[in-house]
Length: 325
Ligand SMILES: [Zn+2]
Image: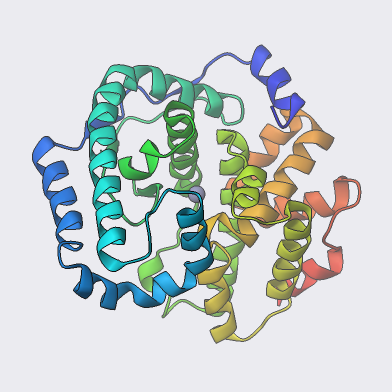
């Protein structure tokens, strides 16, 4: 457990969030077979496949050469690579089939565990309508659109612990559903929205993602270290990027920031999460829970509180004055 206070909070709270009415769908046999047939078809002509992918292969060269040294790959010929990928596809397909059964068996338990994590931090809440769709989705491991949560089973088969990853994912996305009842933003209107609305939305998302990660108990440190990053250096880098954003007034640059800062649970997730962790440690459970409710309506308040109440904040009041431009 990263944060001992979480454990402490958990033991005293009763469960007041109910996610049991979320409908769980699992991908059908036919869709599953078609998905993997299509994937495999792309590797049937090794020369053609190689031409299409040679740039990506070039970028992975050191990694691939190590696989040859380790005896995982026989050599780097196109046909060997394609045979290797076909084997991977078959394995994943079999794993997804097993996972379908496991998900069906454990879905009530999974929804209950996710609800219990939310109960620690948000007021009593029943999510009356919504779905969790376990499918094959290349876009993201978990995502939410309205009250529709989508989970990618391909990635789940590679998780260290699929059940824990699923509980974290459902808790994270359900938190967004609760939180976004307070947000009027729509990505479709990004182009036409005034700069101030875009900035406010970025603030909202930073706080929203940071809290979602904390509440669902995802581990950003582990996530980034797995990608080869030094996490404490990455935290510094993330706050620098966030300060740059707070002082930025060019629309095009803010647009770019909006795209890049949230990619792959990157900079602004880290900033949001660091602020949330520091606030929970400083304020304790009760006050922190009240602050989450305030942040739902006015997320900048959480950042201000981080600056004024936590020891050694990585932002200053001066950084925040730029928000009121
Ligand atoms: Zn999220």
